Length: 415
Image (tube, rainbow, N blue to C red; front, side, top):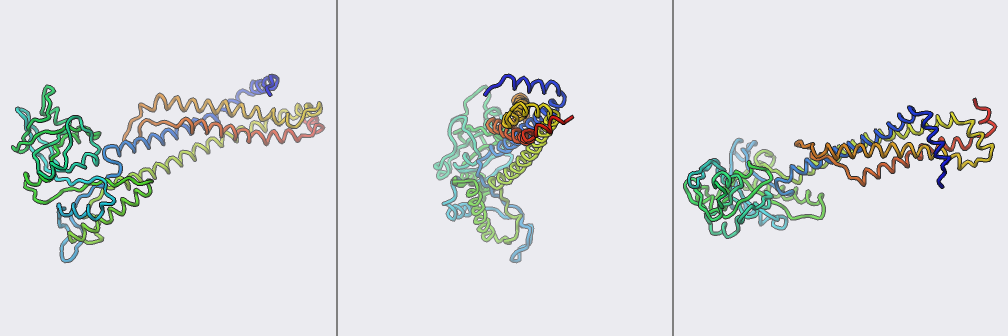
């Protein structure tokens, strides 16, 4: 029930103790403010890490070869080897229930590309149709490579958006045009863009079979790349990806006579494992931020409890008079609780609004390698304030209960 006199008493008490009330409210507000900022930074870190994984498919696995590092079966360390089309086929047959997309990659560095009077040095990559999904590329125009291009060893190419700007001047449409790659004509069938920017758009994609034949690469493959079929949860996906990597690594080591304990000979980049490590780190950082923020809030709540104890002590005689005149214990408890809840609520929402405003105006300007647009879920933030108000009520209850139990005769003797 609303009581104007009760609110007048609360504001009178606050006016008499402005500095004390301000400092108590400041400790509560700063606790919420710090928690909101920390949660925003935690979300910003998660945004930044997520952005790092946008360049490629989120469940991609990349495989390449290095020099061996362990002597094995009479073969010295430092030996180089290459994967082949046979490896590509066998790995698929062994793991086809797990594989969603796959592609070999045959690389030609520093190829000379020319169209009319324009020319430049670019990278050629022989790939399969699945490479578009694995690298998360978007088609600007035309199409990507298809299976017919692979089977028929077609002399077609998909070019990056940067190459289009370099070779095709005045907005000329490259589709259907022929470009020379090391003096060999290839027909442009598509233009792609990549979130990695111009560095990733500086490539010609050719059918892998065509690249091997035209550039005399035989059956050799530089890299293998895969995505796995979606799973019901992240944990299962990580486990399946580890099983796939183990199966593939075991086969390649056996086929190419590599020591089982040689960890350097075969390079693996498993984006799911990498993502798990990053997200585990983010979880620990967020948990630490929550701990710091909650500890700060607890300090503010303790401050509220202390100020209520002081207020009860200062108003002992007043409380005694109230009880002598017939005031019920519940009314005494309500009086103290109402003041505690008011201070906590006002300070809590002030800290919340301050934190949200700072994130709203400053957050979009924060763009680093690992932090992007720090923000906080409003529902979580508002829930935190209501929990704070509940904590403030609990903090005020004990001084209020102490006040309600004061005997009038003892209170009236208080000096």
